[in-house]
Image 1 (cartoon, helix red, strand yellow):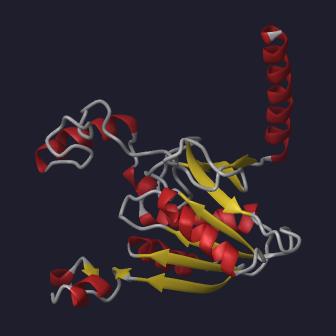
Image 2 (image 1 turned 30 degrees about the vertical axis):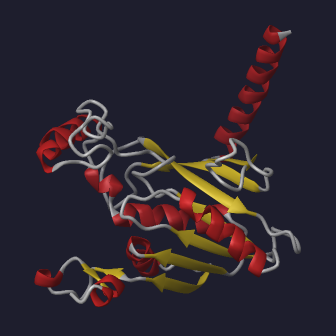
Length: 252
């Protein structure tokens, strides 16, 4: 019985793979998934969300030169329930950090979805280098283990070894730049959503990514929200990095 199931799954996977390769679709999804990534109860209330993985080029044209290398970009959405999701407006929530993936956006997604009466598709993603997307980690150097000097945070004494281990795996670090992450977002909006009017919200470091998205100017985006701005243009080098909200709140 198990063998038959395995064979059946293999046949279905082969058919799906052939279809994907034929159409050039680089999005593996959408699949039913839990609204929250983590739960204290060990389970979720349901699978109202949908999840996918976009196979993105490590290097987009004009950014870096690695050929045929792909990395995974994790995407999640709450589809509109107050109408046809294929015609509904879209909202993207972009997490900050820097380096913070999107699980903490789960409650914000649900809250916003509810306040909009389910009339919009609400999206989020783990930007490249974080979380369930292709993560930049230092496995070879063991720089982010709980027993290392600063646990999951990298101690300055570990930076050189971590950088060396990453350069062994990736020859093009520009593939993990803000521009690359913003291009992921622009591609997802333009190629893998419904083409309807889209609002993009970024919080703290996420505002830097959203600001870069503005430069790319995807035509579907009709509005941007920047919450706790982290900006590079126009900031004096002796003031960088400048967190507009934090600087004021902490009297700096």
